[in-house]
Picture 1: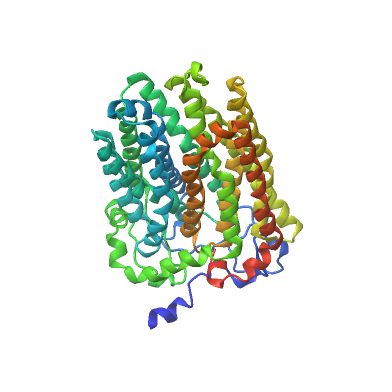
Picture 2: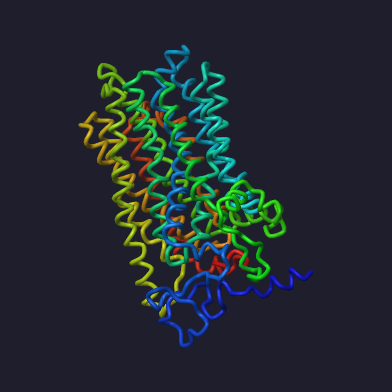
Length: 519
């Protein structure tokens, strides 16, 4: 009873009433007449949201170096899942020959991996709320490492299938919970840039995996070797977790004097990484029931559901392009393909990576520019819908990019057409991914991992489905037709965005206060 009473009076109000306006936040002193008691940024005008405390465990007070080392760690963790999920396309020919199986049969584990990467994010996210961010990240990476090692050591198809699926079950945790770390560490005005840096590795990973996997298997001609590379990639992640990760969840509803102590020495930090500190302070965390409830509540909010539908429609074709290009370009010339070997296939995956990096350079500054312009025009008030503008720009690259890929493949044009179109699509995907993540996090700041889990599911569930029908569809109807229809679907994905852009303000006002405040 005493703790509940204290919880109503935090030492520092994370989001003071003075900066809360109807459906938005005052994030600049431009719109204020009284700023006494508010902590401001170095520029003297940006309001720090949330307002930091002076407690040693408040990660908002960490040094920039410490924050960015942890940002690199969670970004690498997000990379691991899709890197390992997508690498399976590289050695598939060698596996098919060794096991005497068809390519479709040999590829089944890779398709299942995509599905599991989406579904199990919904399992691990509530655990980060109930048990803490750090231990869920650590233990899922350790188990993912063990099963990836089992994948590399597999001798037969059934063992390989089981190890591959189990590795996906655990490795997906990092790509869904990493946004929670990011939200905990950085102030409101910093988050979009950090999301861009995180997303650059995250969105590149489905292309980096096949690229490097093709390079390796093209030289060694041994399908085990790409998976040994995966063992090293995850091993590095575990080292980074041990070196740099700490528990970032900080309950701002509890006064500083009531916060559990968080000694900053290595041994105490490892107790938090391993989860023993969280178990000893279980009452500090929300209940498991509340954790699962918030996961359901989030997806039932209409503006977020529309965002997920749009992301599903626009991102799903990334998997389709991956599948189609690998098959078409790997098919011998006499059978209508391009006759590429593994090394050449690896280089082909470089084009979407270039597009994604270009999008990060552009979005790194453009997203902040949009926010600053909006805040200046509206007397210091910020509303999340301003984050959606880059999605319209992204469609200007994604739609023609997909068309160009389809036309180039159908008419057997030079590879430059596919490479350029694929790069354009990668650029568009990157711009939209940062925008939808930033909007969702701004709309539901108290549920960052839940938001990431549903967006990840929207992304992967479509990719899982496309993997089964993309190639037969193109072969039957023509790749100019199949990719043309896909471009129309990407264009249609703008409709839910436009609805949220127009009515998102009203939708957010109807959202439960618990998920609207507490940034």
